[in-house]
Length: 325
Length: 260
Image 1 (tube, each protein chain N blue to C red):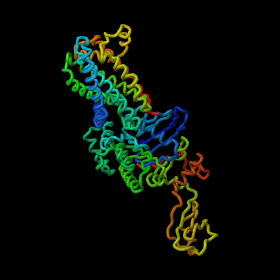
Image 2: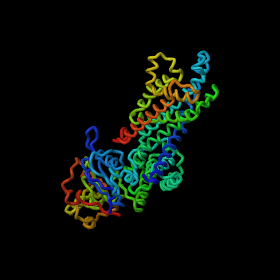
Image 3: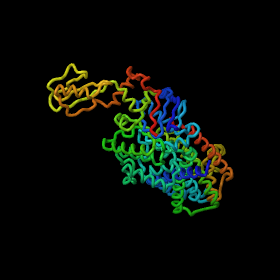
Image 4: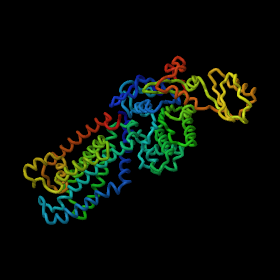
């Protein structure tokens, strides 16, 4: 099946000599919800800029649903909808016109453009504000406006560059629901985000880019399975009578009602609870100390080094993304 | 290019022009009103107060002589400034990216911006013409020449404004050319006088000023008087349009000022 996105040997060197991309390969399956993660300056936005033809590449090939960026640019552009990181609409234009004009740039007649505009602005809760100037919208509304604008020509691939930055939790979750729904309907989505919980919740496939190169490209499940140790925090119902010292699990008492435990790969929670039961410790609730993906991300991108326990042979860059079509 | 593509490009072109027209119409106090007031002052001061003492110019009442030039002055400056400010503004706020990610050919982007500028140039030109009727009767010697010259001139300066907008990096950059190049060339382009009044050396120098031919040809269409053959003026304007359009297209194709 033709990939939604196929990148081979992509390089970008800016005029000042900075090499933003050092020859990346990336493949996104059609229908995928794909996370492209990396620290600031890793090359995410440059990659997206090249795919959307806002940045000229230095070398390599980019294909979107089989259309080559160099030879079939118009088909590539028709296939992509972009929600950029920065607000890039005219602040002094009514939001309905922003969306309708975008449709017009794709050759969609004005009547049809208004129908689509109504549909997407309704979906994103902005239709009532269609006559308002864009500058009057809140940050969250501006993000939603850019999503409506990106969808109005009904692209097969939606690229979102940090779409929920600065958006409150309630709104973020409603945007997640919306994005999940349009992905379920068959639209491929590439997402960059600094909220790793967001990537873990939404995306089935993931690539991590650092220092201009892809250091990981796999499924979310396989990536999370690489986590050597998870730290869990246990909230207790009452102070523990004592802390078992010879347990196979390393338990640490943080305060009267809180314990922390490291669970290594291969160990089971059943073992933990058996030990706790035997010691008469009653657990009220349990949670991860930090987001699992965040833990992995920090380890992988720190100093640009892949940690020793994450060997390439255990699911490195050679793995193909899960096909979610 | 298939008919469906042509239809899509036509829709895209109309979208850009409509957007541009709505833009300058929304801020008409900044875009339409000032040139109209300025030109009305020109009519009152130069045409009325000073013109009465000047008497005739090339056999015409001074007020009647300057009306075509002042209309052209308004058309030139407004066509130019509409495109340069709109294009630079779209770069500054980055909403030029709305067009760059879409499948519109660069030629359509250029034409859209240019005809947006033409729309403002002509709107202000018509407003100035209406104001002039308070001071001078409407004089039409050759209507087709008037219309074609004003349209071509407007296209030419809209293209020049676009090129300025491509290179501009700051708001200063969009004011330099209109202030230090466009206004002096227009004032020295025979708006207020006939070039035949100048000493021979200055006449020769003036002939390097393209605006001279535009004002002259438009005055021919209005009054029937010209210092140069109208065909020469058409050829010069057409030549400039061709060159400026080609430059604009090359710049956009190379992504100058708009792509990294």
